[in-house]
Image (tube, rainbow, N blue to C red; front, side, top):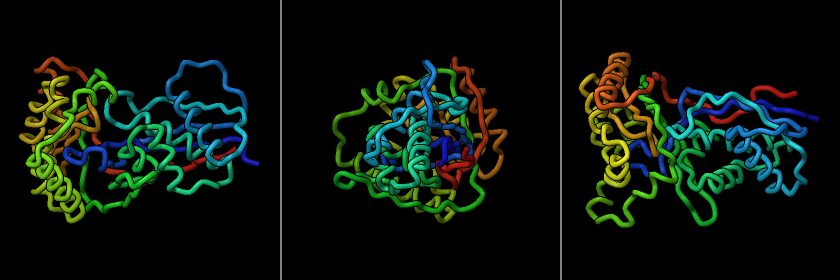
Length: 292
Protein backbone atom coordinates (compact mmCIF):
# COMPACT_ATOMS: atom_id res chain seq x y z
CA UNK A 1 0.00 0.00 0.00
CA UNK A 2 1.28 3.48 -0.90
CA UNK A 3 2.30 5.38 2.23
CA UNK A 4 3.45 8.66 0.66
CA UNK A 5 3.28 10.52 -2.63
CA UNK A 6 5.17 13.48 -4.00
CA UNK A 7 3.13 15.69 -6.30
CA UNK A 8 4.59 18.22 -8.73
CA UNK A 9 2.19 21.10 -9.38
CA UNK A 10 2.55 24.20 -11.58
CA UNK A 11 2.21 27.87 -10.82
CA UNK A 12 -0.63 29.41 -12.78
CA UNK A 13 -1.62 32.76 -14.24
CA UNK A 14 -5.34 33.51 -14.28
CA UNK A 15 -7.64 36.02 -16.03
CA UNK A 16 -5.05 36.90 -18.73
CA UNK A 17 -6.65 40.33 -18.86
CA UNK A 18 -10.31 39.97 -19.90
CA UNK A 19 -10.98 36.34 -18.93
CA UNK A 20 -12.00 37.06 -15.35
CA UNK A 21 -12.56 33.82 -13.39
CA UNK A 22 -12.70 31.82 -16.64
CA UNK A 23 -9.20 31.67 -18.19
CA UNK A 24 -6.13 30.17 -16.56
CA UNK A 25 -2.67 29.21 -17.78
CA UNK A 26 -0.26 26.71 -16.24
CA UNK A 27 3.33 27.92 -16.17
CA UNK A 28 6.59 26.01 -16.43
CA UNK A 29 7.29 26.92 -12.79
CA UNK A 30 6.59 24.07 -10.42
CA UNK A 31 6.49 23.14 -6.77
CA UNK A 32 6.87 19.68 -5.19
CA UNK A 33 4.71 18.67 -2.24
CA UNK A 34 4.86 15.37 -0.35
CA UNK A 35 1.75 13.97 1.31
CA UNK A 36 2.11 10.95 3.59
CA UNK A 37 0.19 8.85 6.04
CA UNK A 38 1.13 9.72 9.61
CA UNK A 39 0.72 12.48 12.17
CA UNK A 40 1.62 16.05 11.23
CA UNK A 41 4.10 17.78 13.53
CA UNK A 42 2.92 21.14 14.85
CA UNK A 43 3.39 23.75 12.13
CA UNK A 44 2.39 27.26 11.13
CA UNK A 45 3.33 26.64 7.51
CA UNK A 46 0.50 27.99 5.36
CA UNK A 47 1.38 25.68 2.46
CA UNK A 48 1.12 22.61 4.67
CA UNK A 49 -2.22 23.72 6.08
CA UNK A 50 -3.73 24.22 2.62
CA UNK A 51 -2.41 20.86 1.39
CA UNK A 52 -3.76 18.99 4.41
CA UNK A 53 -7.14 20.72 4.32
CA UNK A 54 -7.58 19.81 0.66
CA UNK A 55 -6.35 16.25 1.19
CA UNK A 56 -8.75 15.68 4.06
CA UNK A 57 -11.58 17.11 1.97
CA UNK A 58 -10.70 14.61 -0.79
CA UNK A 59 -10.92 11.69 1.66
CA UNK A 60 -14.31 12.94 2.85
CA UNK A 61 -15.50 13.30 -0.74
CA UNK A 62 -14.49 9.68 -1.37
CA UNK A 63 -16.43 8.69 1.76
CA UNK A 64 -13.31 7.23 3.34
CA UNK A 65 -12.35 7.82 6.96
CA UNK A 66 -9.72 10.52 7.07
CA UNK A 67 -6.40 9.07 8.31
CA UNK A 68 -3.57 10.95 9.98
CA UNK A 69 -1.84 12.89 7.22
CA UNK A 70 1.32 14.94 7.07
CA UNK A 71 2.67 17.21 4.35
CA UNK A 72 5.94 18.89 3.49
CA UNK A 73 7.45 20.93 0.70
CA UNK A 74 9.35 24.12 0.01
CA UNK A 75 7.24 27.18 -0.88
CA UNK A 76 8.64 27.99 -4.33
CA UNK A 77 5.49 29.67 -5.70
CA UNK A 78 5.26 33.07 -3.97
CA UNK A 79 2.13 33.69 -1.90
CA UNK A 80 -0.24 36.57 -2.65
CA UNK A 81 1.39 37.39 -5.98
CA UNK A 82 -1.22 36.17 -8.47
CA UNK A 83 0.62 32.98 -9.40
CA UNK A 84 -1.84 30.49 -7.97
CA UNK A 85 0.04 29.52 -4.80
CA UNK A 86 -3.09 28.49 -2.90
CA UNK A 87 -4.53 26.64 -5.91
CA UNK A 88 -1.24 24.79 -6.33
CA UNK A 89 -1.21 23.73 -2.67
CA UNK A 90 -4.82 22.56 -2.80
CA UNK A 91 -4.33 20.77 -6.11
CA UNK A 92 -1.33 18.98 -4.67
CA UNK A 93 -3.36 17.91 -1.64
CA UNK A 94 -6.26 16.65 -3.75
CA UNK A 95 -4.10 14.78 -6.27
CA UNK A 96 -1.92 13.37 -3.50
CA UNK A 97 -4.93 12.18 -1.52
CA UNK A 98 -6.48 10.66 -4.63
CA UNK A 99 -3.26 8.72 -5.22
CA UNK A 100 -3.34 7.43 -1.62
CA UNK A 101 -6.98 6.48 -2.20
CA UNK A 102 -6.10 4.50 -5.31
CA UNK A 103 -7.41 7.02 -7.84
CA UNK A 104 -11.10 6.81 -6.97
CA UNK A 105 -11.92 10.46 -7.70
CA UNK A 106 -12.66 11.65 -11.23
CA UNK A 107 -11.16 14.77 -12.80
CA UNK A 108 -14.51 16.52 -12.52
CA UNK A 109 -14.80 15.67 -8.84
CA UNK A 110 -11.30 16.96 -8.15
CA UNK A 111 -11.96 20.21 -10.02
CA UNK A 112 -15.28 20.83 -8.29
CA UNK A 113 -13.71 20.14 -4.91
CA UNK A 114 -10.69 22.33 -5.58
CA UNK A 115 -12.74 25.19 -7.01
CA UNK A 116 -15.04 25.05 -4.02
CA UNK A 117 -12.09 25.37 -1.67
CA UNK A 118 -10.57 28.18 -3.76
CA UNK A 119 -13.81 30.03 -4.44
CA UNK A 120 -13.17 30.04 -8.21
CA UNK A 121 -11.82 27.64 -10.80
CA UNK A 122 -9.58 29.73 -13.07
CA UNK A 123 -6.36 28.80 -11.26
CA UNK A 124 -7.53 25.37 -10.14
CA UNK A 125 -8.21 23.97 -13.63
CA UNK A 126 -4.69 24.61 -15.00
CA UNK A 127 -3.11 23.63 -11.67
CA UNK A 128 -4.82 20.24 -11.88
CA UNK A 129 -4.68 19.63 -15.63
CA UNK A 130 -2.05 21.96 -17.14
CA UNK A 131 -2.09 24.09 -20.27
CA UNK A 132 -4.46 26.92 -21.09
CA UNK A 133 -7.88 26.18 -19.65
CA UNK A 134 -11.25 27.73 -20.34
CA UNK A 135 -13.46 26.95 -17.34
CA UNK A 136 -17.03 27.98 -16.53
CA UNK A 137 -19.49 27.17 -13.80
CA UNK A 138 -22.22 24.77 -14.90
CA UNK A 139 -24.79 24.06 -12.21
CA UNK A 140 -23.03 22.43 -9.28
CA UNK A 141 -19.92 21.66 -11.30
CA UNK A 142 -17.65 23.10 -13.99
CA UNK A 143 -17.05 22.72 -17.70
CA UNK A 144 -13.42 23.01 -18.72
CA UNK A 145 -11.63 22.62 -22.03
CA UNK A 146 -7.94 22.81 -22.86
CA UNK A 147 -7.21 25.35 -25.58
CA UNK A 148 -4.02 25.04 -27.64
CA UNK A 149 -1.20 27.58 -27.64
CA UNK A 150 0.91 28.06 -30.74
CA UNK A 151 4.61 27.29 -30.19
CA UNK A 152 7.26 29.83 -29.28
CA UNK A 153 5.49 31.84 -26.59
CA UNK A 154 7.38 32.95 -23.49
CA UNK A 155 6.00 34.52 -20.32
CA UNK A 156 8.00 37.27 -18.63
CA UNK A 157 7.03 37.95 -15.03
CA UNK A 158 7.70 40.88 -12.76
CA UNK A 159 6.99 39.65 -9.23
CA UNK A 160 6.80 42.56 -6.77
CA UNK A 161 7.87 42.30 -3.17
CA UNK A 162 4.37 43.16 -1.95
CA UNK A 163 1.29 40.96 -1.75
CA UNK A 164 -2.16 41.59 -3.22
CA UNK A 165 -4.35 39.02 -1.41
CA UNK A 166 -7.21 37.89 -3.63
CA UNK A 167 -9.90 38.52 -1.03
CA UNK A 168 -8.81 42.09 -0.46
CA UNK A 169 -8.43 43.04 -4.11
CA UNK A 170 -11.81 41.48 -5.00
CA UNK A 171 -13.51 43.94 -2.65
CA UNK A 172 -12.60 46.71 -5.09
CA UNK A 173 -14.31 45.14 -8.08
CA UNK A 174 -17.44 46.83 -9.49
CA UNK A 175 -20.78 45.30 -8.58
CA UNK A 176 -22.17 45.86 -12.08
CA UNK A 177 -20.86 46.43 -15.62
CA UNK A 178 -22.33 48.39 -18.47
CA UNK A 179 -23.35 46.47 -21.58
CA UNK A 180 -20.51 48.18 -23.43
CA UNK A 181 -17.93 47.00 -20.89
CA UNK A 182 -19.37 43.48 -20.82
CA UNK A 183 -19.19 43.24 -24.62
CA UNK A 184 -15.65 44.65 -24.50
CA UNK A 185 -14.46 41.85 -22.21
CA UNK A 186 -16.43 39.05 -23.84
CA UNK A 187 -15.07 39.87 -27.27
CA UNK A 188 -11.50 40.20 -26.09
CA UNK A 189 -11.56 36.96 -24.11
CA UNK A 190 -12.73 35.14 -27.23
CA UNK A 191 -10.12 36.93 -29.34
CA UNK A 192 -7.42 35.99 -26.82
CA UNK A 193 -8.19 32.26 -26.98
CA UNK A 194 -8.22 32.37 -30.80
CA UNK A 195 -5.01 34.41 -31.00
CA UNK A 196 -3.09 32.08 -28.68
CA UNK A 197 -4.32 29.01 -30.55
CA UNK A 198 -3.38 30.31 -34.00
CA UNK A 199 -0.25 32.29 -33.17
CA UNK A 200 -1.87 35.57 -34.18
CA UNK A 201 0.57 37.38 -31.91
CA UNK A 202 -0.30 40.81 -33.27
CA UNK A 203 -3.78 40.53 -31.77
CA UNK A 204 -2.61 39.89 -28.21
CA UNK A 205 -2.33 43.50 -27.09
CA UNK A 206 -5.94 44.16 -28.05
CA UNK A 207 -7.03 40.76 -26.75
CA UNK A 208 -5.67 41.29 -23.23
CA UNK A 209 -7.40 44.64 -22.61
CA UNK A 210 -9.75 44.53 -19.62
CA UNK A 211 -12.42 46.77 -18.12
CA UNK A 212 -13.60 44.54 -15.26
CA UNK A 213 -10.86 43.97 -12.71
CA UNK A 214 -7.59 45.64 -13.71
CA UNK A 215 -8.84 49.25 -13.45
CA UNK A 216 -10.08 48.54 -9.93
CA UNK A 217 -6.88 46.80 -8.88
CA UNK A 218 -4.83 49.66 -10.27
CA UNK A 219 -5.92 51.54 -7.13
CA UNK A 220 -3.71 49.18 -5.11
CA UNK A 221 -0.92 49.07 -7.70
CA UNK A 222 -0.88 52.41 -9.56
CA UNK A 223 2.44 51.58 -11.24
CA UNK A 224 0.75 48.73 -13.13
CA UNK A 225 -0.07 50.52 -16.43
CA UNK A 226 3.39 52.05 -16.52
CA UNK A 227 5.01 48.62 -16.19
CA UNK A 228 2.65 47.33 -18.90
CA UNK A 229 3.83 50.12 -21.19
CA UNK A 230 7.51 49.51 -20.40
CA UNK A 231 7.16 45.82 -21.23
CA UNK A 232 5.48 46.54 -24.57
CA UNK A 233 7.98 49.28 -25.45
CA UNK A 234 10.73 46.68 -24.89
CA UNK A 235 9.12 44.21 -27.28
CA UNK A 236 6.40 42.39 -25.35
CA UNK A 237 3.32 41.36 -27.29
CA UNK A 238 1.06 42.32 -24.38
CA UNK A 239 1.04 42.69 -20.60
CA UNK A 240 -1.58 42.04 -17.95
CA UNK A 241 -2.06 41.62 -14.21
CA UNK A 242 -1.65 37.95 -13.35
CA UNK A 243 -4.65 36.76 -11.36
CA UNK A 244 -5.42 39.26 -8.62
CA UNK A 245 -1.80 40.48 -8.61
CA UNK A 246 0.67 41.67 -7.74
CA UNK A 247 2.65 39.88 -10.49
CA UNK A 248 2.60 41.45 -13.94
CA UNK A 249 2.93 39.04 -16.86
CA UNK A 250 4.03 39.83 -20.40
CA UNK A 251 3.85 37.50 -23.39
CA UNK A 252 6.78 37.55 -25.80
CA UNK A 253 8.40 35.59 -28.60
CA UNK A 254 11.74 37.42 -28.46
CA UNK A 255 13.70 39.96 -26.39
CA UNK A 256 12.64 38.36 -23.10
CA UNK A 257 15.68 39.57 -21.14
CA UNK A 258 15.21 43.12 -22.42
CA UNK A 259 11.53 43.02 -21.46
CA UNK A 260 12.37 41.76 -17.97
CA UNK A 261 14.90 44.57 -17.47
CA UNK A 262 12.45 47.19 -18.67
CA UNK A 263 9.73 45.96 -16.31
CA UNK A 264 12.14 45.97 -13.38
CA UNK A 265 13.49 49.43 -14.20
CA UNK A 266 10.01 50.93 -14.48
CA UNK A 267 8.91 49.28 -11.25
CA UNK A 268 11.93 50.63 -9.38
CA UNK A 269 11.33 54.08 -10.85
CA UNK A 270 7.78 53.87 -9.43
CA UNK A 271 8.99 52.78 -5.99
CA UNK A 272 8.58 48.99 -6.22
CA UNK A 273 11.19 46.30 -5.74
CA UNK A 274 10.81 42.71 -6.84
CA UNK A 275 12.23 40.04 -9.10
CA UNK A 276 11.78 38.94 -12.67
CA UNK A 277 11.30 35.45 -14.04
CA UNK A 278 11.27 34.23 -17.63
CA UNK A 279 9.17 31.14 -18.12
CA UNK A 280 6.73 29.61 -20.60
CA UNK A 281 3.31 28.01 -20.70
CA UNK A 282 3.33 24.61 -19.00
CA UNK A 283 1.62 21.53 -20.40
CA UNK A 284 1.61 19.50 -17.18
CA UNK A 285 -0.84 19.78 -14.33
CA UNK A 286 -0.48 18.30 -10.86
CA UNK A 287 1.00 14.82 -11.13
CA UNK A 288 2.55 12.21 -8.87
CA UNK A 289 6.30 12.07 -9.43
CA UNK A 290 7.27 9.69 -6.62
CA UNK A 291 5.67 7.21 -4.24
CA UNK A 292 6.87 5.53 -1.10
